[in-house]
Amino acid sequence: MPSGEGFESGSGSALLVKSGSIQLVPNNTQPANALSSALIDRFKATFDENPDWAWPFVPSIPFVGRHYRQGSGLLIYASAENFKWLNGNTPPDWLTNDDAWNRYRVQYEMRGRSSADFFPWVGIQPVTDGGLLAAALFVTEQLGQELPTEPRSLLEHISVSNWCKFTIYVPGENKDYIGNIKRSIPSLPYVVGELAVLQPAVVLLPGKAWKRDLFRAAMRGASPSTRFIPVPQFNGTVVSTLLGRFDSPAQELHRRYAGKPLGKWMGRLRRVNGEHAWRYIALLDEALSERLVLAT
Image 1: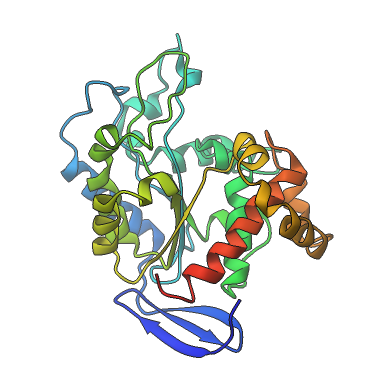
Image 2: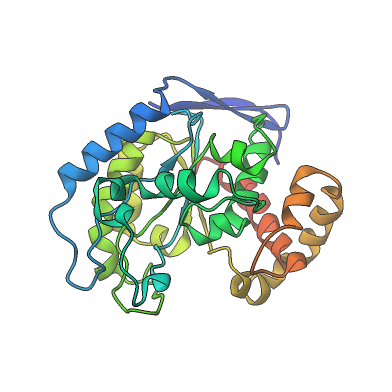
Protein backbone atom coordinates (compact mmCIF):
# COMPACT_ATOMS: atom_id res chain seq x y z
CA MET A 1 0.00 0.00 0.00
CA PRO A 2 1.17 3.58 -0.51
CA SER A 3 3.19 5.12 2.28
CA GLY A 4 2.96 8.51 3.88
CA GLU A 5 1.32 10.13 6.86
CA GLY A 6 -2.03 11.70 7.55
CA PHE A 7 -5.39 11.52 9.23
CA GLU A 8 -8.89 11.36 7.86
CA SER A 9 -11.43 11.96 10.56
CA GLY A 10 -15.16 11.69 10.86
CA SER A 11 -17.84 11.22 13.45
CA GLY A 12 -17.04 7.55 13.99
CA SER A 13 -13.30 7.03 13.51
CA ALA A 14 -9.98 8.44 12.46
CA LEU A 15 -7.99 6.76 9.71
CA LEU A 16 -4.26 6.99 10.32
CA VAL A 17 -1.91 6.32 7.42
CA LYS A 18 1.69 6.27 8.61
CA SER A 19 4.85 4.68 7.29
CA GLY A 20 3.05 2.43 4.86
CA SER A 21 0.52 1.11 7.37
CA ILE A 22 -3.12 1.85 8.02
CA GLN A 23 -4.53 2.02 11.53
CA LEU A 24 -8.07 2.74 12.59
CA VAL A 25 -8.51 4.74 15.78
CA PRO A 26 -11.95 4.57 17.43
CA ASN A 27 -13.52 7.73 18.79
CA ASN A 28 -16.54 6.28 20.61
CA THR A 29 -17.83 2.83 21.42
CA GLN A 30 -20.85 1.06 22.85
CA PRO A 31 -21.06 -2.53 24.15
CA ALA A 32 -22.11 -4.99 21.46
CA ASN A 33 -25.20 -6.05 23.41
CA ALA A 34 -26.32 -2.43 23.55
CA LEU A 35 -25.74 -2.11 19.81
CA SER A 36 -27.82 -5.21 19.11
CA SER A 37 -30.62 -3.92 21.32
CA ALA A 38 -30.54 -0.56 19.55
CA LEU A 39 -30.65 -2.30 16.18
CA ILE A 40 -33.62 -4.45 17.15
CA ASP A 41 -35.51 -1.39 18.36
CA ARG A 42 -34.72 0.43 15.14
CA PHE A 43 -35.73 -2.50 12.93
CA LYS A 44 -39.01 -2.91 14.79
CA ALA A 45 -39.77 0.79 14.43
CA THR A 46 -38.96 0.64 10.71
CA PHE A 47 -40.87 -2.54 9.89
CA ASP A 48 -44.36 -2.28 8.45
CA GLU A 49 -44.92 -5.39 6.38
CA ASN A 50 -43.04 -7.76 4.13
CA PRO A 51 -43.09 -7.19 0.38
CA ASP A 52 -45.74 -9.35 -1.26
CA TRP A 53 -43.01 -11.31 -3.12
CA ALA A 54 -41.05 -12.22 0.01
CA TRP A 55 -41.02 -14.98 2.58
CA PRO A 56 -43.15 -13.85 5.57
CA PHE A 57 -40.30 -13.35 8.06
CA VAL A 58 -39.18 -10.10 9.66
CA PRO A 59 -35.76 -8.77 8.62
CA SER A 60 -32.85 -9.71 10.87
CA ILE A 61 -30.33 -7.31 12.33
CA PRO A 62 -26.67 -8.07 11.63
CA PHE A 63 -24.66 -10.49 13.71
CA VAL A 64 -22.75 -8.12 15.98
CA GLY A 65 -19.66 -9.60 17.60
CA ARG A 66 -19.39 -9.21 21.35
CA HIS A 67 -16.16 -7.25 20.89
CA TYR A 68 -17.27 -5.21 17.89
CA ARG A 69 -16.38 -1.53 18.31
CA GLN A 70 -17.97 1.47 16.68
CA GLY A 71 -15.46 3.49 14.72
CA SER A 72 -12.99 0.65 14.19
CA GLY A 73 -15.29 -2.27 13.35
CA LEU A 74 -15.57 -4.18 10.10
CA LEU A 75 -19.03 -4.90 8.64
CA ILE A 76 -19.31 -7.46 5.84
CA TYR A 77 -22.41 -7.93 3.72
CA ALA A 78 -23.45 -10.99 1.75
CA SER A 79 -26.38 -10.52 -0.64
CA ALA A 80 -29.61 -12.16 0.59
CA GLU A 81 -30.76 -14.87 2.98
CA ASN A 82 -31.23 -18.36 1.54
CA PHE A 83 -34.40 -20.21 2.56
CA LYS A 84 -34.03 -23.02 0.05
CA TRP A 85 -33.73 -25.46 2.96
CA LEU A 86 -37.19 -24.48 4.20
CA ASN A 87 -39.01 -26.06 1.25
CA GLY A 88 -41.85 -28.19 2.65
CA ASN A 89 -40.63 -27.81 6.25
CA THR A 90 -42.32 -26.05 9.14
CA PRO A 91 -40.36 -22.89 10.00
CA PRO A 92 -38.41 -23.20 13.26
CA ASP A 93 -39.51 -21.10 16.21
CA TRP A 94 -36.60 -18.69 15.82
CA LEU A 95 -38.02 -17.62 12.46
CA THR A 96 -41.49 -16.88 13.77
CA ASN A 97 -40.99 -15.53 17.30
CA ASP A 98 -39.05 -12.52 18.61
CA ASP A 99 -35.73 -14.30 18.02
CA ALA A 100 -36.22 -13.70 14.30
CA TRP A 101 -35.04 -10.09 14.69
CA ASN A 102 -31.58 -11.35 15.69
CA ARG A 103 -31.57 -14.76 14.04
CA TYR A 104 -27.94 -14.80 12.87
CA ARG A 105 -26.83 -14.57 16.49
CA VAL A 106 -29.50 -17.09 17.52
CA GLN A 107 -28.36 -19.60 14.88
CA TYR A 108 -24.74 -19.15 15.91
CA GLU A 109 -25.53 -19.82 19.57
CA MET A 110 -27.72 -22.82 18.74
CA ARG A 111 -25.61 -24.44 16.04
CA GLY A 112 -22.39 -22.64 15.29
CA ARG A 113 -20.59 -21.89 18.56
CA SER A 114 -20.02 -25.48 19.70
CA SER A 115 -19.99 -27.32 16.37
CA ALA A 116 -16.97 -29.29 15.18
CA ASP A 117 -16.92 -27.36 11.89
CA PHE A 118 -13.89 -25.15 11.34
CA PHE A 119 -16.08 -22.23 10.25
CA PRO A 120 -19.21 -21.69 12.35
CA TRP A 121 -22.80 -21.65 11.19
CA VAL A 122 -24.48 -18.23 11.37
CA GLY A 123 -27.19 -18.62 8.72
CA ILE A 124 -25.20 -16.65 6.11
CA GLN A 125 -23.72 -19.16 3.66
CA PRO A 126 -20.61 -17.23 2.51
CA VAL A 127 -19.68 -16.79 6.18
CA THR A 128 -20.36 -20.41 7.10
CA ASP A 129 -18.40 -21.61 4.05
CA GLY A 130 -15.49 -19.51 5.28
CA GLY A 131 -14.98 -17.14 2.36
CA LEU A 132 -16.17 -13.96 4.02
CA LEU A 133 -14.45 -14.84 7.30
CA ALA A 134 -11.17 -15.33 5.45
CA ALA A 135 -11.81 -11.97 3.79
CA ALA A 136 -12.36 -10.45 7.25
CA LEU A 137 -9.10 -11.90 8.54
CA PHE A 138 -7.18 -10.45 5.59
CA VAL A 139 -8.83 -7.02 5.80
CA THR A 140 -8.35 -6.62 9.55
CA GLU A 141 -4.69 -7.62 9.23
CA GLN A 142 -4.21 -5.05 6.47
CA LEU A 143 -5.73 -2.43 8.77
CA GLY A 144 -3.15 -3.22 11.42
CA GLN A 145 -5.69 -4.68 13.84
CA GLU A 146 -4.35 -7.47 16.03
CA LEU A 147 -7.46 -9.64 16.18
CA PRO A 148 -7.79 -13.35 16.95
CA THR A 149 -6.89 -15.87 14.26
CA GLU A 150 -9.49 -18.46 15.29
CA PRO A 151 -12.73 -18.17 13.28
CA ARG A 152 -15.18 -17.96 16.18
CA SER A 153 -13.03 -15.49 18.07
CA LEU A 154 -12.60 -13.28 15.01
CA LEU A 155 -16.34 -13.40 14.35
CA GLU A 156 -16.92 -11.87 17.77
CA HIS A 157 -14.90 -8.81 16.72
CA ILE A 158 -16.76 -8.01 13.49
CA SER A 159 -20.30 -7.76 12.17
CA VAL A 160 -21.85 -9.74 9.30
CA SER A 161 -25.21 -9.55 7.59
CA ASN A 162 -27.07 -9.71 4.27
CA TRP A 163 -27.57 -6.43 2.43
CA CYS A 164 -31.00 -7.55 1.20
CA LYS A 165 -33.29 -7.99 4.19
CA PHE A 166 -36.01 -9.99 2.46
CA THR A 167 -35.93 -13.22 0.46
CA ILE A 168 -37.92 -13.99 -2.69
CA TYR A 169 -40.57 -16.60 -1.98
CA VAL A 170 -39.81 -19.47 -4.35
CA PRO A 171 -40.00 -22.72 -2.33
CA GLY A 172 -37.04 -24.96 -2.95
CA GLU A 173 -35.02 -22.30 -4.79
CA ASN A 174 -32.65 -19.48 -3.92
CA LYS A 175 -33.12 -16.31 -5.97
CA ASP A 176 -30.48 -13.57 -5.79
CA TYR A 177 -31.87 -10.11 -6.52
CA ILE A 178 -29.19 -7.69 -5.33
CA GLY A 179 -29.06 -6.27 -8.87
CA ASN A 180 -32.82 -5.58 -8.99
CA ILE A 181 -33.32 -2.06 -7.69
CA LYS A 182 -37.12 -2.37 -7.35
CA ARG A 183 -36.80 -5.35 -5.04
CA SER A 184 -33.73 -4.02 -3.24
CA ILE A 185 -35.25 -0.67 -2.25
CA PRO A 186 -37.34 -2.07 0.66
CA SER A 187 -34.08 -3.13 2.31
CA LEU A 188 -32.50 0.32 2.16
CA PRO A 189 -34.08 1.78 5.35
CA TYR A 190 -32.72 -1.15 7.35
CA VAL A 191 -29.24 -0.83 5.84
CA VAL A 192 -29.24 2.88 6.62
CA GLY A 193 -30.40 2.15 10.17
CA GLU A 194 -27.75 -0.44 10.90
CA LEU A 195 -24.98 1.72 9.45
CA ALA A 196 -26.11 4.63 11.61
CA VAL A 197 -25.96 2.45 14.72
CA LEU A 198 -22.82 0.42 13.99
CA GLN A 199 -20.72 3.24 12.47
CA PRO A 200 -18.24 0.77 10.96
CA ALA A 201 -14.80 1.90 9.87
CA VAL A 202 -14.89 -0.35 6.82
CA VAL A 203 -17.73 -2.08 4.96
CA LEU A 204 -17.37 -4.80 2.35
CA LEU A 205 -20.58 -4.88 0.33
CA PRO A 206 -21.92 -6.26 -2.95
CA GLY A 207 -20.78 -4.14 -5.85
CA LYS A 208 -24.24 -4.29 -7.41
CA ALA A 209 -25.66 -2.40 -4.43
CA TRP A 210 -22.89 0.20 -4.42
CA LYS A 211 -23.30 1.10 -8.08
CA ARG A 212 -26.75 2.60 -7.43
CA ASP A 213 -26.53 6.36 -6.86
CA LEU A 214 -29.43 6.31 -4.40
CA PHE A 215 -27.94 3.52 -2.33
CA ARG A 216 -24.47 5.09 -2.24
CA ALA A 217 -25.83 8.44 -1.10
CA ALA A 218 -27.99 6.89 1.60
CA MET A 219 -25.20 4.71 2.98
CA ARG A 220 -22.68 7.52 2.99
CA GLY A 221 -25.18 9.77 4.72
CA ALA A 222 -25.82 7.18 7.43
CA SER A 223 -22.13 6.65 8.22
CA PRO A 224 -20.02 9.45 6.73
CA SER A 225 -16.64 8.27 8.03
CA THR A 226 -17.02 4.71 6.77
CA ARG A 227 -14.87 3.42 3.90
CA PHE A 228 -17.07 1.35 1.60
CA ILE A 229 -15.36 -1.36 -0.46
CA PRO A 230 -17.64 -2.76 -3.21
CA VAL A 231 -16.74 -6.35 -4.05
CA PRO A 232 -18.29 -9.27 -5.93
CA GLN A 233 -19.83 -12.15 -4.07
CA PHE A 234 -17.45 -14.76 -2.67
CA ASN A 235 -18.54 -18.01 -4.30
CA GLY A 236 -17.14 -20.69 -6.57
CA THR A 237 -18.54 -19.26 -9.78
CA VAL A 238 -17.18 -15.78 -9.19
CA VAL A 239 -13.65 -16.76 -8.19
CA SER A 240 -13.30 -19.35 -10.93
CA THR A 241 -14.81 -17.48 -13.88
CA LEU A 242 -14.81 -13.74 -13.19
CA LEU A 243 -11.55 -13.01 -11.35
CA GLY A 244 -9.01 -14.49 -13.73
CA ARG A 245 -7.05 -11.23 -14.01
CA PHE A 246 -6.04 -11.64 -10.36
CA ASP A 247 -4.43 -15.03 -10.88
CA SER A 248 -0.81 -13.84 -10.76
CA PRO A 249 -1.11 -11.71 -7.58
CA ALA A 250 -3.25 -14.49 -6.10
CA GLN A 251 -0.41 -16.97 -6.50
CA GLU A 252 1.99 -14.53 -4.86
CA LEU A 253 -0.37 -14.05 -1.90
CA HIS A 254 -0.77 -17.82 -1.59
CA ARG A 255 3.01 -18.19 -1.27
CA ARG A 256 3.29 -15.25 1.12
CA TYR A 257 0.70 -16.62 3.53
CA ALA A 258 1.77 -20.26 3.42
CA GLY A 259 1.88 -21.59 6.98
CA LYS A 260 0.20 -18.49 8.39
CA PRO A 261 -3.37 -18.38 9.76
CA LEU A 262 -4.85 -16.98 6.54
CA GLY A 263 -3.15 -19.70 4.52
CA LYS A 264 -4.61 -22.34 6.81
CA TRP A 265 -8.07 -20.79 6.65
CA MET A 266 -8.02 -20.65 2.87
CA GLY A 267 -7.30 -24.37 2.83
CA ARG A 268 -10.49 -25.02 4.80
CA LEU A 269 -12.96 -23.14 2.59
CA ARG A 270 -16.07 -24.96 1.40
CA ARG A 271 -17.80 -24.93 -2.01
CA VAL A 272 -14.96 -23.12 -3.75
CA ASN A 273 -11.74 -24.03 -5.58
CA GLY A 274 -9.00 -23.38 -3.05
CA GLU A 275 -6.47 -22.06 -5.56
CA HIS A 276 -8.99 -19.80 -7.25
CA ALA A 277 -10.17 -18.44 -3.90
CA TRP A 278 -6.89 -16.55 -3.54
CA ARG A 279 -8.02 -14.39 -6.46
CA TYR A 280 -10.60 -12.87 -4.13
CA ILE A 281 -7.92 -12.01 -1.58
CA ALA A 282 -5.88 -10.41 -4.37
CA LEU A 283 -8.93 -8.35 -5.36
CA LEU A 284 -9.30 -7.21 -1.73
CA ASP A 285 -5.63 -6.29 -1.60
CA GLU A 286 -6.04 -4.05 -4.64
CA ALA A 287 -9.32 -2.56 -3.39
CA LEU A 288 -7.89 -1.71 0.03
CA SER A 289 -4.87 -0.01 -1.50
CA GLU A 290 -7.02 2.11 -3.82
CA ARG A 291 -10.01 2.93 -1.67
CA LEU A 292 -8.81 3.31 1.91
CA VAL A 293 -5.81 5.49 1.23
CA LEU A 294 -7.34 7.57 -1.53
CA ALA A 295 -10.47 8.35 0.53
CA THR A 296 -13.05 7.55 -2.13
